[in-house]
Image (tube, rainbow, N blue to C red; front, side):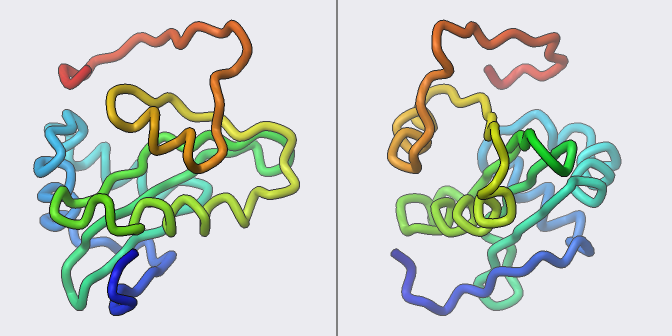
Amino acid sequence: MTSGKLNYTEDRNLPMDQVIALYRANDWSSADKPEQLMNALRHSHSLVSAWDGGKLVGLGNAISDGFLVVYYPHLIVLPEFQGKGVGTEILKRLRVKYESFHQHMLVADGRAIDFYRKCGFERAGQTEPMWIYAGHDH
């Protein structure tokens, strides 16, 4: 876990330069579309960010119908803060908002699979993830 000095907020007025730096540090192609990324985050059903003083160190968002289904598209943490409980805390805060919902969905790949399993997620039956994706990072 972190030393406890991190601050978590639901403020949607995130500084674009820090958001882009966070996404670039993780090689996420969303950083190549800064305006769309910022609009997507601002218009998410929920958004939680983690701060070390004035430095953005992580964020997660949710999109939802507001009643039954929630989807967690982004959970991203600066590499130097990974493995310290930041992502777990962000996801916990998001999940509390939707604890009564019937279905919690996300797509995980690579190292994220084990992380999400530890957070209680499991493969959805025999489903196969499918998408039309304009990125280059998978």
